[in-house]
Length: 197
Image (cartoon, rainbow, N blue to C red):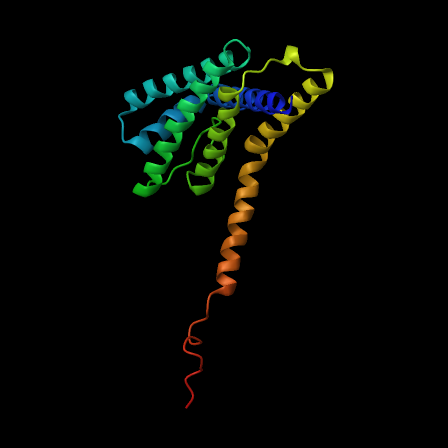
């Protein structure tokens, strides 16, 4: 039963995350245009091509949501999500290695920059897509307690990865940088002396 609860929590967390992603990209004026601009910046594609790819991405996110909501199509939804996330991660890694700096527009705005923290989040989302692919589960087969556990788990995962991940990643990065600076030898102290003979 625990395996089914984990798989369903992952399935519905993906649903919530992809729902937030596509709604964020179309909800306000200029949101989709901004997303298409980011695609163009990251890939070097022309604006019309980037816009067409953006439409395809949003359609894929909508499709993932529609498929993830039903136990009959959840595996297909998780595969669509996994495919999109893998593509997003590939583009982000290539951009980062090429030195291209850009916001991600993952949820329609410029919440975070493309960087290692965003790639780690995408890898966590890829991992989240695996349980629904590997375990067939249905809410109808769970007790009321199991359904509540799925709902709370899905909501907690989605809130963590959408709402709290970026601030936590910024704090963690700042702490790592501060620790490295604090433990780095100061100039003039290398070699064990102050230069006085």
